Image (tube, rainbow, N blue to C red; front, side, top):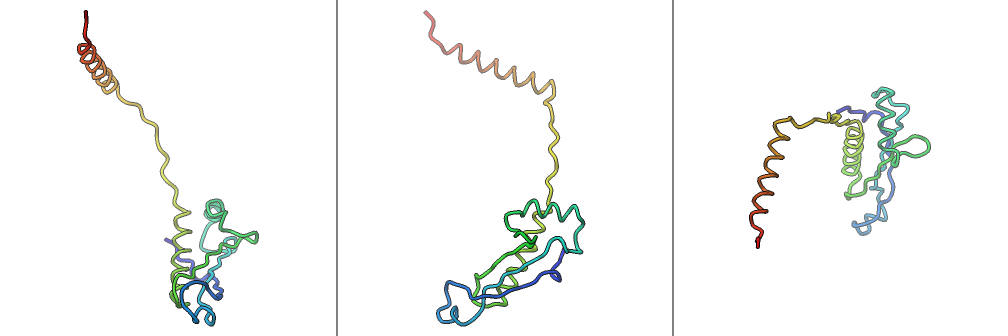
Length: 130
């Protein structure tokens, strides 16, 4: 897990929701921004992977943005936003292993067919014959 918090920039604004008069006075909503192309922490291949996987969250300037306004304090929102963006980027870098297609062994195939025949015979014997 790479920690690129030094490259993040923050912008605050007034948030909506719970807080009463506090909402109208204090800028508690935090928007965290990160310019992917100017990052020194990631290789070019990793940057491309991040850009592809998070394309719906990246604006035209190539900046990944995330806004958090869950808490009533700016400090908590800043902390949550940082954690979320780190988690988001690290998850986008994860590449699952490629599945190698396998074949069942001849013994397994034979065993399965034998079981099917046995079941078929059992059901056939249940039928009423005249």
